[in-house]
Structure formats: structure tokens, C-alpha cells
Amino acid sequence: MEIKYIVKREVMRTLIIIPAYNEAENIEKVVDNIIQKFPQYDYIVVNDGSSDATRDVCRERGYQYLNLSINLGIGGAVQTGYKYAKDKGYDVAVQIDGDGQHDIAYLKDMLSVLEKDEADIVIGSRFIDKEGFQSSAARRVGIRILSVLIFVCTGCRIKDVTSGFRAVNKKFIDIYAKNYPMDYPEPEAIVSAVMYGGRIKEQPVIMHEREKGNSSINLLKSVYYMIKVTLAIIVCRISFGVRRDSSYKKPIA
Image (cartoon, one colour):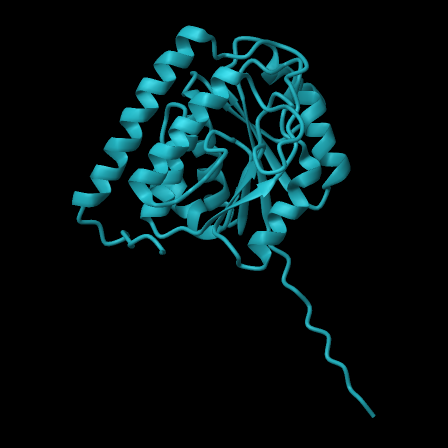
């Protein structure tokens, strides 16, 4: 008689981090979508010192949220989420924006990559299947420039370097809780991840245009963004080259 053994896969405790700044018009749809489609996962809204009714919406709807009394910027809000994930002992943390542009339907595919231990960080990428909202032509050019710069600095080729739709394992929850870039952090976080020996994989996703509210990035801010991020990437790479840190690991080839 043949005996079959069933190996039960351990469920990874997963936290979805939702940074939100003045997203009163969008946050309800974002959170309700998570609750309906993925009730098995926890979430936390990080209200980043919003001047609108974002906090009121979270409180009235009974959402799980952290309230920052001042605006720390996207990096500070996301790092607050990572600190919370570390303190609560989560195995996986997922970043999604509070404006509704990230389609949570792709979360399962992203988490599957971590479950199979194929990567430490999974980035939801618009530019693999090239479907859905692709951003403006000017922004796409900027993203390509940053992608090339990151490849030159690290040898890691990532197409959608500004995507804020990401999932990371416990190793990088710990790293990002201690050290996460503050301003427009996505590209710089890729550089630091590579320098810490992280395995990064892109997963095709579809993103949507913002339905309500206004983007915080305009033409002037876009130019400032490119200059600042370019310098930040270079400085980040150089700092790892001279740092004597016991936690430093060489990048995986």
C-alpha cells in the first residue's frame, strides 16, 4: 500500500503597508479592496501627517492605522510601516500606494515568489508586459535613465525602478526598519538592497491611473527628483564601497 505524505506549508505572516498623504478620497477604496480580497493578511495605513480628512476616514471606518503628527515624506512613512512589521514579527511586508494605482489582484503572484524563496524582494513592474497605465512619456524616460544608472552602479537590471508596489521578506523587513531612504526612496532602496546581497525579481503587474485627488509630483518636482535621486544613488553606492559594516554582504552575482 502506497503511503502519501502531505507536507503542510507554513503560512507566512504578511503585513500590507499603505503610506497615505492626503488620500481621503482614495484610501477607503484601497483598504476595503484589501479586506475583501485578502482578509487573511493584515494591513496598516500610515497617515503621513495629512492635512485633509485621511485620518478621519481611517478612524470612522475602523481601519488599522498609524498617525504621524508631521509629514515625514514617503520614505519616512514606509519605514514607519517596516518598523511596525519588525516589532510585530511579520515574515513578509508589502508596500502599496494609498492612491489606488496598484492593483492588489497581483499580490498573490508576488508573494508566491517569496514563498518559493526565489527572491528577497519582489517589485511589481509595469514595464514587463507593458499593459495598463505606463505613466507619462517624460516620466518613462526618467525611469529608463535611473534604471541604467542603477545597472552601472550595481550590475542589477531593474526596469521599473520607481514602482512602489513591492514585497520583501523578513531579512529586508529588518534592514529597511533600520535604514530606509527618506525622499523618493524606491530607486535608492534597490541600490541598498543589492549591496546587502538581496535577490530582486520583477513581477509583471498592471497599474491604474489615479482616480481622485492630485499627484504630489509636478514638472518642477520631477526635475528636482531626477537630480536628487541621481545623486542619492551614486552616494549610496559609494557609501557601501567604503563602509565597514558587519551587516554588509557583497552583492549576489
